[in-house]
Image (tube, rainbow, N blue to C red; front, top):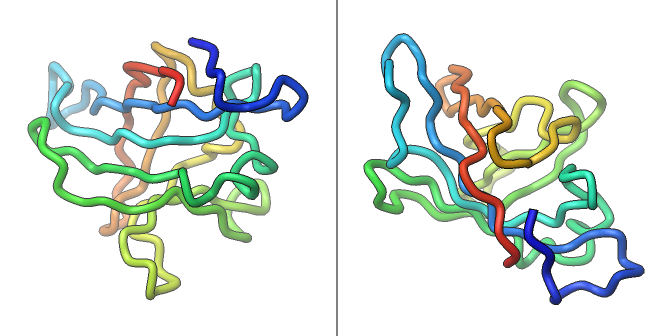
Length: 138
């Protein structure tokens, strides 16, 4: 993980731009580098999302959903009560609603490190697996 100069060393987190690419599946036997997400999140040294960092910098935590390498939706990374572990990280594309279009599956317990895998539940409730393709200082 690349270091960022945008946060103070005492804050315990730094902002990173994370790229997720659709992993291999029955429908995509080779995966898809052009389908996925790019989002900004505050990460601790371990690569886990920092809730304190998000509370401090939530307005900088945006997401772009990509299809064939083109941004098709823009939104925000949000944190809500409920779900596995007592809370849920989600990608929210409509600020005026309380419905999260896509929820990260156990995002709070996953380290966002290149090569790791995470899952996102889409608006239809289907779970899709993504590979962390890139993590760079925001």
